[in-house]
Length: 353
Image (cartoon, rainbow, N blue to C red; front, side, top):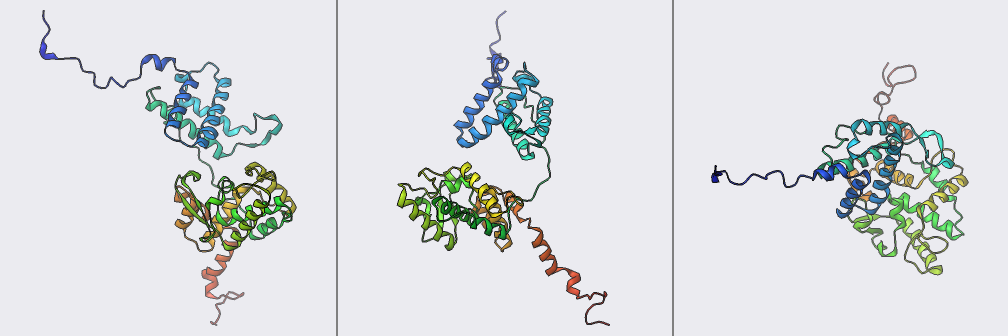
């Protein structure tokens, strides 16, 4: 019996892009991560995101998995496995993998837990889209909820004491004092400040011109500074040129660009000298919180602040609208409806019998 020519060729619609069955069944966990990593690198994801977020967060998950499920493969990762991992890291002690730094009474912060889950979500969603796994095990898992805390900063008086702590007769003291002023006056992130060179300083306009590659949102921005801070910056640049051949603003005693970790250690010393190490947690990002909070308290608008500090979302900027307790009391004293009535101590309204 001859074939009917009217039937034509078999349809291949929907079959050409399907992943080979052999690939799905043989690919390992680390091979899958390598595929993900290379794809994200090709997309132009920042090196810091690749090396400081994706790689370590995947390593943490793999280390846990090798203990909890030593024979698990890619297809064995289910939603229940991911939830078990999240529950484990939510209760584990900080620095558990480093016994010499172990802090048994302190657990990982909710932000850290959320970040690690977000990384796994990104990885497994990618593998699902690429047909390497049939479905993402993270699809039905919600981000953990946690109480939002006020942005940690310090008072004006604490900042005055901190600025007075460095010995400005020394190069390191002058540099630290100037760097603290820049951070508090501009809201720059510490890594942004440490990348500053003379190329980005506009003396006439009293600002720094930051190119797109320096900003997290990959957009160029202008960061204004006050005339007082500009004066300190130019004095530091003069000192730099007397001893070193460099264009960087903030450098070590040996002429190399200053490292963030070194400055953090110096801040701890200055806070102790100022006598405020017991009352507030001093770290570089606290200067950014100080700038944002005081910018809004001083009457600055939300959208201008977002442009200055380069927040990708206005919601991030809005969090700094939480004012301190003293400001709340002062605002209540100024605008209390009962105070406006002018009531006396015996409960009568002034001017009425």
